[in-house]
Each structure stands twice: as C-alpha cells, then as structure tokens.
Length: 223
Image (tube, rainbow, N blue to C red; front, side, top):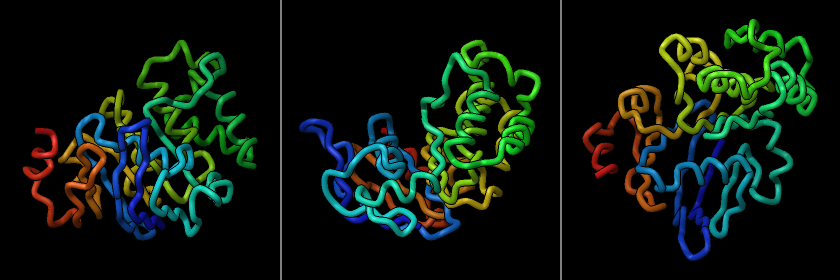
C-alpha cells in the first residue's frame, strides 16, 4: 500500500522530512507520533500528493509519486487540520460538489450526512456551525468516495465522545481502510496501530510494530 524510501521534503533550507523509510501493507494502520513541527503533517501531505518529495522514492497504492499522482488522488481520503470545506456552502452542498468530482451517486450524500448526524443542519452555511460539527462534515467529505487509503491528521480534534462514536465506523479501524494517522494520544494511537512511526525534527526516531512499543518511549518524543 505504501513504500517510502529515503523521503526528504524541504521548506527552504529546513528539512521537514529527512530520510524517512517505511513500508505499510494493505489494511494496516500506521500511527505517527511526534511534537509539533516534527514533520507529521508534511508526511501526510506528501502521501496525499499535495507536496512533492525533494528526494527519495514514494509509492502509494502501487503508483510512484509525483509522476503518477493523478492516478491515485481519487483513491485517497484526506482529513487534515483544515476541513477543506467551502464555508459559504452548506454541508449538503459541499458533499454534493465532492460527489460530482468523484462520480459518486447523490443519494450517497444523504447517507453520509445521516451517518455523521448532520441531516438537521445540512442546509446551513458551514461558517455557522460549531467546530465539532464542521469536523463531522469533514469526515463525511473525506470518506464519501470510499477511499482505499485514509490520511488522518488528528482526526478526533474538536469531537466529543458521542461524535467520536459516530465517526469511528467511517475513519476508525472498523472502516477496513489502510490508514495513516497523526496523533498525540499514545493510548488511542497504540490501540489502533499496526506500525508506529516516531518523528523528531523530520527524522525517524522510532519505527516499530505497535505491540512492541512502550508508551514511555512515545512520551520521550515530546521531551
């Protein structure tokens, strides 16, 4: 599903990612830990084809990036820090637009709005909704086209326990998708992970099967 060898991505003279290498099999979950600025979001954006690698090789869904990016974009779902929603449009209008982009039947929009309990607020502008509601709509958008690979950047941010329970079938382990999840929560992250990646300053400081990772080792990443 993912094969990364020596991935480097720079911002000016600073290496946001420096020599990252890993492999993730189909159906597995990679959880990425690290302090702010460690390179977690940059990694997700490279995998989502939004940023080009400056060095190394990145293969996503059997396709080498960046040359084959157009082949895989429709098979990836990205839930980032930004919800990627048009604020002046309603949740329904946002999802209808996304459905047209991906050739998804319009009735699927209604199913997904119901799945995240947004039917009653579906026709109000996104800008009027609470952060938690916006996050639920963003989950609906990211998963509307049934992607094979989910890229999730702090996916439970702004969600209360009831909302987390709603979105779990769409973005959690039970979704059946291959997932790359950025997290600051060792408890939840380790419980969901097959593979754990720890980043500090863009470099790999930990790469291990989740079953072998001590939570204290994750805490060390933040010190």
